[in-house]
Amino acid sequence: MTEYIKGISAKDTYPLRHAVMWPKMPIAYIILPNDAQGIHFGFYKNKVLTAVVSLFIDNNIAQFRKLATATADQGKGYGCQLLSHLITYAEVRKVGKIWCNPRTDKMEFYMKFGFKVTNSVFSKEEIDYVVMEKII
Image (cartoon, one colour):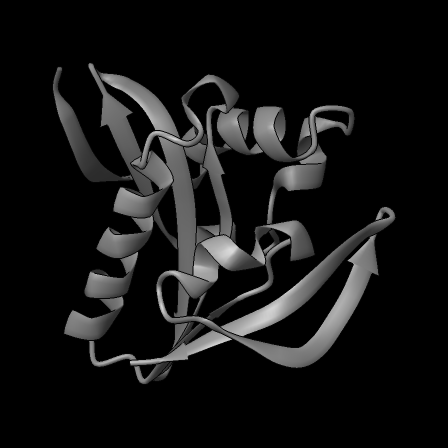
């Protein structure tokens, strides 16, 4: 089995973002206004795009968004590998803080990578989210 991570276009992230995160919404719902300014990564398993994430760096603060792994491949460590790659990428670029806003039921996943829960919480489409951050 061949596994690798590489930079991809924002457009390449859309099918997985849509299928995993908001399958009942129109595809336009998962397109971010600043996608063109993002750095997008894809995890490939046997040449099939299996997980995606998008990173947005502003000065020395980075936010990542839309980490999505194909439903059939969740729990196999592919999202972990992709997130580790993203954190290393940010560290090399001297980013001081990286943050995300995951669904509250996914907080423990990010805590394994050293992300801390903040007091900032919000809801969207009846789903609760929390802002998490990591100083690097």
